[in-house]
Length: 129
Image (cartoon, helix red, strand yellow):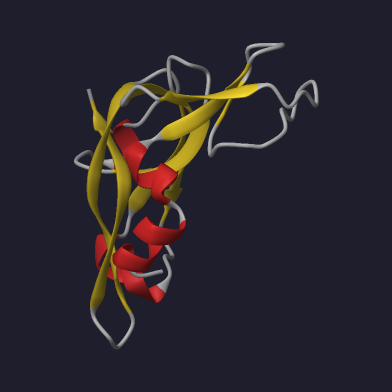
């Protein structure tokens, strides 16, 4: 989705906003209306740290067309200090050097160029800390 439209429709993903349950304390990203752990509706907005740790990862050798020039690359499940998890591309390193437990930092970068229109789409990628 083009960045301007995405920014208007889901701004919390660009600002790393999450929700924290007032009952059980679970942090959910993206924000939720109902806690997925205890079903409570007492949620408050919270901002996530841009630091994280690799939980698991995979190397992509056969990417979609839009990312063909980046292969091979790593996709990683990152956990923030608030215990929120998100899947992002891990860049600025060789995929063979990625390990579980590796410290990373989230950066706002270009994700891809959209099809024939050439519209740039932005989001978060992880880089080694």
